[in-house]
Image 1: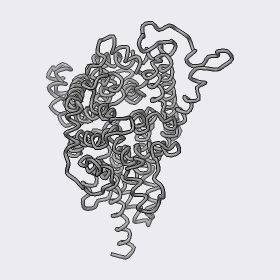
Image 2 (image 1 turned 120 degrees about the vertical axis):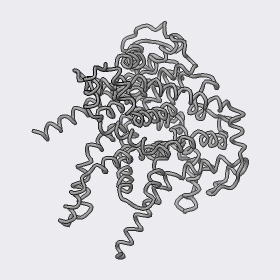
Image 3 (image 1 turned 30 degrees about the horizontal axis):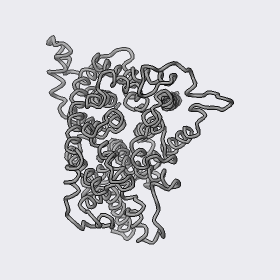
Image 4 (image 1 turned 90 degrees about the horizontal axis):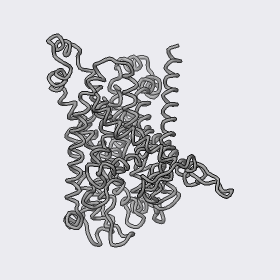
Amino acid sequence: MAPALLVLVLVAAWPLLRTIWFGFTDARLGDLGGASWIGLRNYLDVRDGQWTGLLADPLWWHAVRNTLVFTVVSVALETVFGLVVALVLHRSFPGRAWVRAAVLIPWAIPTIVSAKIWGWILHDQFGLLNDLLQRAGWLAEPLAWTADPALAMGSVILVDVWKTTPFMALLILAALQMLPKDCYEAARVDGVPPVSAFLHITLPLIAPALIVAVTFRVLDALRIFDLVYVLTPNRPETLSMSVYARQQLVDFQSVGYGSAASTLLFLTVALLTVAWLGYGRHRVEAQHA
Amino acid sequence: MTAKGTLRGAGFLALVAIIVMVSVFPLYYAVVTSLESGAALFEVNYLPAALDWSNYRAVFREQPFGRNILNSVMVATGVVLAGLALSVTASFALARIPFRGRTLLLMTLLAVAMFPQVAVLSGLFELVRTLGLYNSLGSLGLSYMIFTLPFTTWVLTAFMRDLPGELEEAAIMDGARPLTIVVRVFLPLMGPALAATGLLAFIAAWNEFLFALTFTLTHDQRTVPVAIALISGASQYELPWGQVMAASVAVTVPLVLMVLVFQRRIVAGLTTGAIKG
């Protein structure tokens, strides 16, 4: 027990505390030792009547909004598609094992690789998607899927949904396979239509597993970095909080400012998690009361 | 069968076909593209039009891609072995020894695996510099513990909790000490669990991007994801797409095969970690 905890203190707890501390300093990447305390000035400051700092930076708020939009839309779509795929795989049909194997493929492809493959499919000049849509007659002119400000976020969401729906589907499928069969027999005997059986039996029974899967996906989506960094580099329309923080830290060498951004991201995720867990406990207690 | 039943059957079949198409087609298209060069690359070919290996040759000759693969293999293997070794004893304590704050500790572990890794980036950067590990694979071995260790501990704890209690009761009766129980009684039973957990941790380490991008600088220290992300052409706007696809296929096909072969175990590992916890 002790060695594992020690390693985690060294690589997680200590760096986290140092990052929070750096957020209150003017540290530069080349000279971390020369950092001096500047209080909250990375977060908010007034200079010659001008508000400066993270909380006054429109680009930061842009990143916050992008991250939240990405998280809500992509997790919602993944849940719906995951549910559909899981219900399909739950039925027995010839070749089911092969279909399940095929579904796993997007999950097995590294994120960077899927970002590159989709970057090629979505390419504005030579991409497959434009070709396909033009052949079908749904598109007159090729679209710049990853470069057009109006489409870039949609493309990021599309690739993320493609890549992570299998995870969702597998977790839901595992929950489906643990359901008692007699409920459904009783429902069929009583003449309950399949749709209401799904809404009133299946959904409530798999709800706990669904909530766990959604929680995992939300936490993962809130820290999105690699997909955005590779698929839509340097686009303010898709800039996420993680990308913003790393850009300040590494590209602009402003470790103090970047650490402040990292700290805010950490606080956001921590608060959301605590609120979510608290809400979950509250609901469980309310049900038992 | 009634007409309505046939129609429904056809609808189901179409749904299955769409799911398979969407899952498989992008990788298939990457394979097709990776085997094209010259002008053929810039036509959209739905069927393989050429069998030209020059992109693969170029990736391994013009870039240190072989070295990048070796780096990734070394880092991921090292991280998995260290992670499993450290987490076996930890998960024994968490699964079998009741103590105050056990649930809190388990939740903290999960939180460490799920929190945004950019939050430790500057602190880790300082640590890596201080230890003299910057631009070396050691920096990745160290930083990847953040997500491997909590994950392996969590899944192994779930597996161990399911093992019957009589096992260690008998061993305790025979006077065995906790470490002996772990090594002699639990380990032999945990082969499948260790394999599944190790495989998932391997994939996570193989795919990691943020730390690898930040803590390595030179081409020959890069891991596969960073190498692929940073492949560049003659100009900023001319990405050698054939080479990018060749590199992507070269590292993905072995991974996909591995996942398909160990499908059952991986699914078991994933769901144990997420649901039973």
